[in-house]
Image (cartoon, rainbow, N blue to C red; front, side):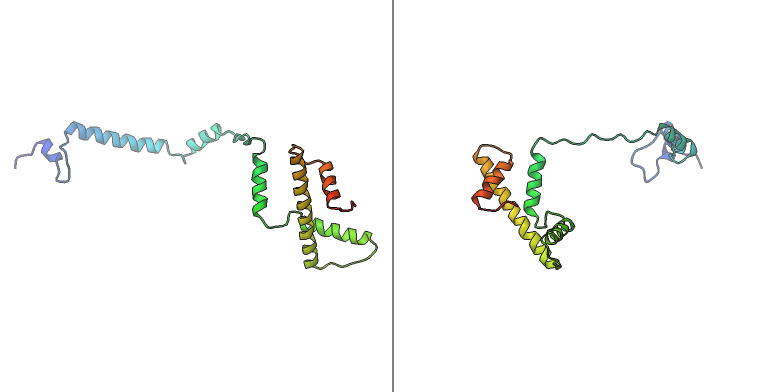
Amino acid sequence: MPRKPASSRLNRPGRRYPVSRQEYQDRKKNKEKRKEDARNNNPNTPKMIASKMLDWKPPTRQSPKFFRPGTVALREIRYYQKTTNLLIPKKSFDDLAKEISQESGSSFRFGKDVLTALQTSAEDFLTNILRLANLVAIRQKRVTITPEDIKVVMELLDIQQI
């Protein structure tokens, strides 16, 4: 049986385009080269691990992001307006309430609910005074609340200073 030409031997039924002998050999060389490169550049070989260790540098610290003045304050205002939790730490307020009751000369024992109600009303009172003091500051064309603004509010509400 006569031997078929090389081009017909390489053209198997699954192939789309005819491949010449030269192209076939080039592809084979390229495939072998890729395998060899993969073996040489394997990141887990001791040679590659040692080179990584030599190239290692400590991570650089990113500079903190700066916001324009007032941006963070407005974000905090929106956050605290959405939340309903208490702003003063519970333990600190409990200690303060017990200390004030001891200074008055009586030895009261406070329940958990009583302290929570007392703290809620105290925070409400303080936020109302600060809100009114802010209105006074705005009326005087200022942005910052001063102690004088709080004194004016206390006098208007007829609150005794402690």
